[in-house]
Structures are given as C-alpha cells and as structure tokens.
Image (tube, rainbow, N blue to C red):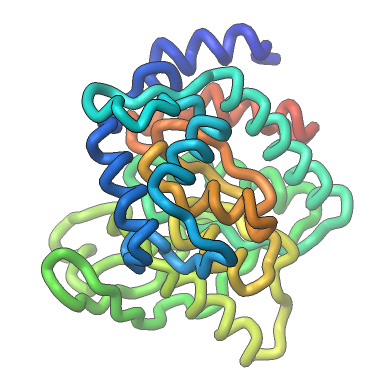
Length: 271
C-alpha cells in the first residue's frame, strides 16, 4: 500500500501539489470572471450567494492553500499537499460508500488526455464491486461553445468514462477526446437517462462541468480541480458538491497512477 507520506512526496515531485504549473495570473483571472458571473467559469454552477474576487481568494486559500494575499499577483500558484491528501481520503470514503451500497455511478472528464486512466480505473473497480457504470446518451450530439465558436461534439464512453469528441476526431487521429469545461455533456447524459426511465446515478465522478453540472441538478458529485477552477470549490462550500480534491489536473497521465492506487486502497477497492 502506498503510504500518505510516500504519496505526499510524489505529489510534490510530480508538481501535482506544491508549486504547480497553473499561474497566479490564470487563477486570479478565473476568480474575477467567476465573480462577474461568466458561464465559462461557472461551468454549470448557479451560486447561491454573491462571490467577490476577494471572497474567492479566501475560499481557495482555505481549500487549496493558494496565497490569501490579494496583492500576490504573479508566479506559480501553490497547492498544499496536506489539503490534497485530506481531500483524497474523503474522496475514497465516498467511493467506498458507493461500492458498499452498489449505487449506479456516472464518470466523465473534460481532461481525457490526462485523466482518462484515473477515472477508468475507478470505473473498473466500482463495476467489480457491483456498481452499475452508466453510459446514457452515448453517441448523442452536444453543441459546445469554444474559443473558436459553437462546435458540435459527440458524447462517447471509453472504458466506462464519458468524454466528448469532435465529429472528425477519429478520422484525424485525435484521441482520446476533447478538452472541455462545459456542463452540457453531463446535462445531456442525465436528461437521456431520465427520459429513458432507466437508472440515474447515485454518484457522479469527474471534473469541470461534469461535477458542477451534476451537483447543480441535485446529484451527489465528487471530483478533482485545479486552482483556476473555483466553481467546484464554491459548489463544495455551498453544499452541492460533496468532495473536491485540489491538484494540478494537467500533468502527465502516468503521474496520476500513484493517486489511483492510493484512492483505491483507501476505498478498499484494490483488485
């Protein structure tokens, strides 16, 4: 079993925590846009209270360990590895509870190039424990606003994990999917499941809009988030997201493997 101390060392060495690649400028810009109600940063969350930029800095300092000083405006952002470890333990507890009660689960990612392997391992373990891993609306089209304008994407599932692709992605060799913060894919998946009268998830696992979109609709949701993703932490603070793990969500995919082992061990789901 990977110890907490060993994982802490890995988090720092891989820059999953400690000084991370996300810049302070990027994070402050996200907090400013969130405070202004920009849907690109709200990613499906409808905040219950007014969050000013300074409120968000305080929240992110508490939940992630970033600087609480509004005058700190440049350099690398920082994630406290102790906060990451505490959140990973809570994340594992939710997985364990889902497995014990065999609740249906839905997994989705807006970071398929980095995090597909992490979520796929969770899907495999939960399936082996008797949970139904859902795949509603597979193949359906979702129109997502991108920096290039409105683009149609197709909802797909790889190893039990939802993601979106541009229609020509397979032909162009772009795998395993598109990067997106949009909540529209999870809304489409949940709507399709409801309309079909089938199982609805008791737990949604993912990142970005997958977590905020599901949490806003009243589904229990847990996930991962970087320092420039304040919506998930606001959702957690307001009670619509159960657990958010602070870490860099865009490092090399193999750097998440020790986290996968740690979480599955803590959840008693190791195979």
